Length: 365
Image (cartoon, rainbow, N blue to C red; front, top):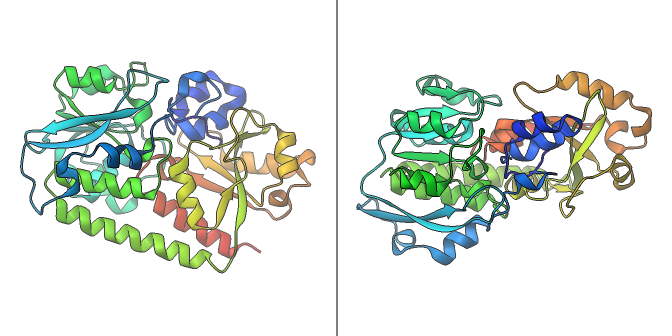
């Protein structure tokens, strides 16, 4: 699957640009996952820098119990395609009614013990985490696709949380940060979904959520667990050396399409733990098949998402394409399927996807 800019959701992009179907999927669907269209520009300040430079006193000295009112630094912009900047959100108490605009953000709240706080979830585009499946069933699904502002506000939340690219006034958007705040609804934009994000952005999101909901111990314990998993991935990949990769998708009728993934820095940071380097990480704009062949990455990553093209059909077409036979990834059968929710949910489930991919890389001839 390809990825377009996270400023607009991948699925919306797929619908608009059938020829680049998968390419648009991996980053905005992610991103509301990246875009060959200027409309999906989710260009944002790096989560870590923005938070550290504008952090309120509470951010630097968390206690074991939250004292309200609590002010945290989060993010805002004035609409689709504009730059994200820091904005404070003040909580007089722990939120009681939360809408998660993606599956991944809802799963993260479950991990922190906050299932009962959720009144809605949307954007169910990938495999869910089996470990939280039963808890997830308790959350009302306001839309299996991206939810509109009308649906979100209709759930009467006091907090809307999730992917940055979905905070927009569009048929696929939950409304802007400013618009929701004007209605008295707090917002929490995941810093992992902003350009420049790294694994540290995930740890920061968890720490902030721990304080917002007064579950700091849960947050600290879970962060420690994730850091151990990150180190294990890094250690296991150390002996195998670096490999190059490219994101690909079915651009229509089995034709290969390539997405640069240049703004998907969170996924790129995690893939780096596996010794994988994005061949087109510095490229903007469209990437031709000729560029792919000339660059010749070792590995191709094909994103799988609910409602997408049958991945087995796509794999068969790619491996049979006579024009691609010079690629190392074709010769070595090194096209790997990655789940959209795991890699573009901007949440902990990226570890599940990375661990699966790591095992497949080790097993490869």
